[in-house]
Amino acid sequence: MDMRTHIEDYALLGDCETAALVSRQGSIDWLCWPNFASPACFAALLGTEDNGHWSIAPAANARSTRCYRQGTLVLETTFENDEGAVCLIDLMPIRDKFSHVVRIVRGIRGRLPMCMQLVLRFDYGRSVPWVTRTEEGAFRAIAGPDMVIMRTNARFRGQDLKTLSDFTVEREQSVWFTMTYSPSYEDAPAPIDAEEELRQTTQLWQQWTGRATYEGEYKDAVERSLLTLKALTYRPTGGIIAAPTTSLPECLGGQRNWDYRYCWLRDATFSLLTLMNAGYYDEAKAWRDWLLRAAAGSPDQLQIMYGIRGERHLLEWPAEWLPGYADSKPVRVGNSASEQLQLDVYGEVADALLHAHLGGIPWSRTDLDLQCSLTAHLAQIWQQPDHGIWEVRSLPQHFTYSKIMVWVALDRAVQSVEKSGMAAGKADVQHWRALRDKVHRDVCRHGFNQQINSFTQAYGSKVLDAALLLVPLLGFLPATDPRVRGTVEAVEKQLMRDGFVLRYNTEETVDGLPPGEGIFVACSLWMVCALSRLGRHDDARRLFERVLALRNDVGLLAEEYDVSAKHQLGNFPQALSHIALITAAYEFTPAKGLGPRHAKSKTEKSGNGGGGGS
Image 1 (cartoon, rainbow, N blue to C red):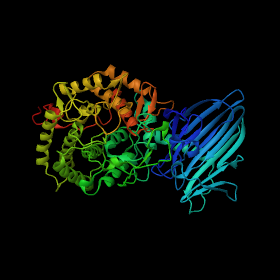
Image 2 (cartoon, one colour):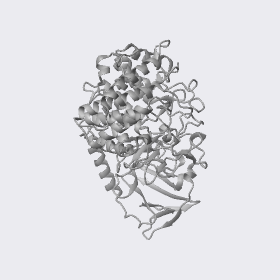
Image 3 (tube, one colour):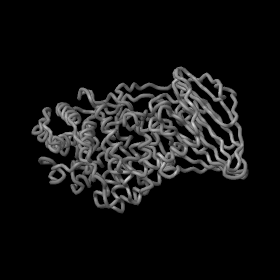
Image 4 (cartoon, rainbow, N blue to C red):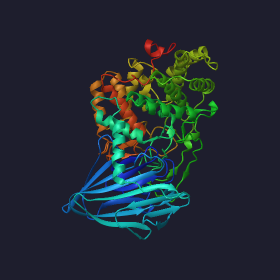
């Protein structure tokens, strides 16, 4: 990977089962085939060009600009110099049986010599395929179970384990390339028509975005974020991955490199509200159904994340042959955080299921019984320390946010039983109400530090945590409570860098890793919501506009941002960043969709601190 290619220099292609990243220079440097969790066949993003890439660019230096077609994931990159100008159109058609990448070069003016270079390397850039020509003259590459067929109307040749093509495009002329993945033990897929795929893909995406109900002043930003969220959805199951990449670093040259190609339960409520608020109830229901299937089973085996199909075994191992983005090692495949105890996910599941029903998705015996089983188990283990929302790789602690989410789980379980009208045999609602109030008192007593006038990261600590900005959105305390205001102001004073929010201070928190990372995009957007709820609307809007300015030229956000270097950090694009952007955008609309993230509890309505408070 050329270090001149920054993380924000990439754009996203997707077919709702996998995704590719394309650089400003027209190089596809990341693609996992046939699905998000598969080994990459283009892995230059985490190594060098020899680890796999597919570039189409002018033979001589040329300026480039790019944009998505309105309402689509069809990318158009314009290259121009004194000789001429062309438009490179990149897309992945919404797949039926096979997954395709389509690339079309169209002449705009003059004559522009072009170069195509294809380096396929399966198994995360390690396996060189056996390449042959088919009877029809197409390119065929096979390695073990994987096969890729490339077809084109340009001449191509093999050289030094690469496939090359030199061609010139004149005004109104088109040169096209299609690449299709198939299992190697099946017959080669039939050819596709590049222009027809472009027409149909454009139409399908524009029909999808046309269903969105958001009409606020940030419509373009919300639409692009919704498209990104849809692209990160695994259509066969409804699961939504956190990001299509692994090991893009949170600190250049560091070890904070994780595999995000999985589905986190933590994002469940935000994802549901985002989709339902925007009018996408089919996608919301599919996500709810994925959640029910993934979380099904013994309640003591609930994981924080699952695979795209609900897989539980996410073994973490290093791809040692890859040097990593900007020499950030290790490059990780899998995620061992899936084995951690994180109490907050019980609250996320309960919150999501309640909101699904409040949003109009019908109740079922399955989701009510699951919620009751999980709540009964949580009532037995809630006093245990855990690894927290940030998945620390150090000893577990009594994290304040985790305990707040225990309260959320109990509160939402009570509301679900009450609102469903169903008899719940496994529900001990009276006990859950009493325990809810007990947990609330426990958090207010041990999680709030009077000296710094703020809730803290862990019980008895003085360390701050930006996750606690969510307290008013969760309904644990109303925004008018002085403890909420104190927490927001403390985070604003101690965790903000150049106007943006850190999730916590890595110099102060023992998280099992060397210190250092960028500002956390979602946390900055949570601050927008918190400021808005405090009535500081001008401050909220200013911060929101600053976060919007962090997006790249095609509207995409990674997980973090390096304020000093002015570059994005972490896996890209990040679902949570875009979900938080949509959530914050609703703070500035007259109609706020389904309202706050939480269903109002008796605690918030009364503002009494929940059964006595502290």
